[in-house]
Amino acid sequence: MARFNYRMQSILNIKAKLEDQAKMEFAQARRRLDEEEAKLDALYQRKEHYEEEGRHLREDKLYVQDILDNKEAILKMDEYIANQQVWVKRAEDMLEEARLRLQDAMQERKTYERLREKAFEDFIREENARESKEIDELTSYVHGRKAK
Image (cartoon, rainbow, N blue to C red):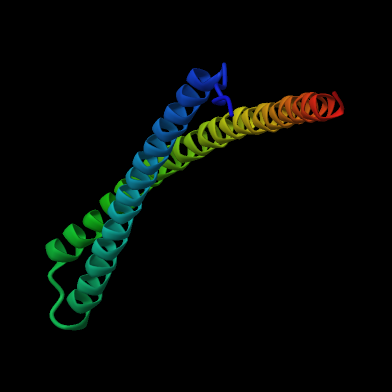
């Protein structure tokens, strides 16, 4: 039996490598989003800490400067949180772009794999037809020799 040689195997290999690269980019974007979300969570926790501290400052003796400093810290945390939310949104957008690139790369690779499978099926059909023809010729030859 002849060996199957897919003429577009190099393209299929390139598509597989591009898919692997897209997977790595997607994973990197996911990791970046996780980091940005962790930073945002830390800022929320820090703000909660300042708010709790502000409640304690108002319970006992009132130290106006401490209360003002606490209020300023809370306002600053709101600013930091707003900035971090922008970074989280950017990371989400980058993740979505990476997901779309990955999806396209997977689709292209699968298309070339289907083409390869179809070419292999055609090859098998051709090989079976060739073998069948050889068997018929051999049978005709053997039968013809017996008749003589």
